[in-house]
Image (cartoon, rainbow, N blue to C red; front, side, top):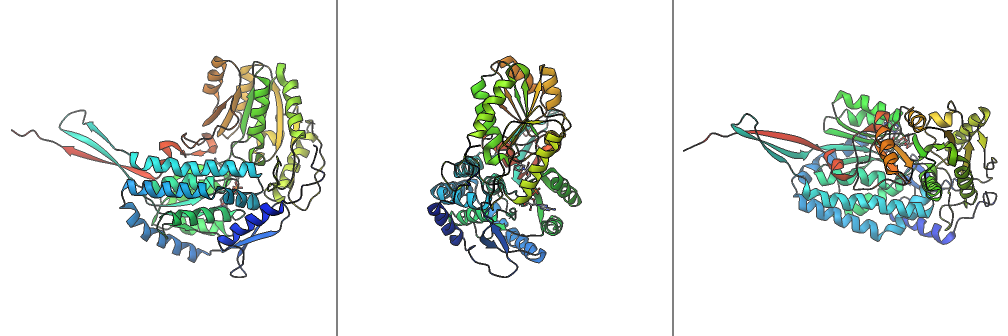
Length: 495
Ligand code: NAD
């Protein structure tokens, strides 16, 4: 790796601009000694403070959202669409400030942060467009004598819990369809990255969303929060993005009040490269699927399964690209890999590499840890990784590429499906027949075919198996915030 030994200095003009955004949302000062500190993973410095809500304050937020929700549910779909469209425009007008804030609190490169703003804003635009298109159905009763009508109505107050890796997009992917459907929301961002969500919600209010309709609850006690809030009878929906372990806890809590539940959980994406793949395209796709967000993405390629005829060339190509990456503060232009979100993440990644090497994996990149106060971790390629290595069986969530080789398509598919997860997968081949035959055999909700970043606001994002329940994006994402009601209309012929 060329530049990891001298971690780039923070670019001062970008940092100053980011600090101004922190001040704009009033997070530049602590209001009480119990406020939560938000840190820059580049150097661990405190960049802002947010309030630490206790359970009583969280329940007050539920009450405020609930009463604002009644008026909102009665607005027309066109009104909701217009407000969402204005919110989208404000997100785009403030794109650079939002990107700076994302990089400052989460660490990803500015290029990735800008891409997140585009992606995150796209959900708001999409649901502005979907709000007036939500339609019911009319069907003749099969045995005659009447008609069956369906309507789609808002599910009610939704609790939205989001992770730190996409602090804007994971929030807009939930808030926008909830508002489009006519629901009030209580959103709980991750403690590590609450500032971006607070800024986005501030812009929503500027766009015309009623002040109390979106309640943002920041708390250091997420367990107490979910226990109290999900037990409140005013809450009718929970939508969570995060780890499978926490998702299971929330599903158990949701069961008590039979809450409609959406779960976007962890992944262990297989990335299949066949001998007939276009090598350059496969390496480029691998780089994007692995390194976007520093590898901290739920759909990040976890296991590279490469056919033996192309494996050496693929490993060489990917190793070269990883070695050429500039590592440093995400605020510095040109950097390809920023810090990991915190030191815990770095220790976890180091343990994964150590375990794989102890079991026989061959490291192709430098193994030393870059020296810096921040939470940096080198992009690492491990070749010939054995099946029982932790790096294969668990979600890596960082810039480690684990390569395994296979001979036949059947072997690749069997190994790819040998996981409790089923979020995303990737297949690289120049054969359409092979692409579809592999696609049909993989147990995932999302598949990139010769494509390293498959996400799109217009597509239903979600997993199968332990990767989740429900879909976000597309028209299906709106239905997650609606109930279907049916009326059986008896009709009698009159003369
Ligand atoms: P996490 O599960 O630790 O935390 C996610 C959120 O849940 C945070 O806001 C956290 O404060 C909160 N939380 C934790 N315990 C809770 C509890 N008992 N009650 C209520 N809230 C609680 O996950 P993370 O480390 O923030 O994010 C990484 C995980 O998220 C990875 O597993 C990744 O795959 C997953 N993820 C999934 C998707 C997807 O769309 N499927 C997208 C992004 C991230």
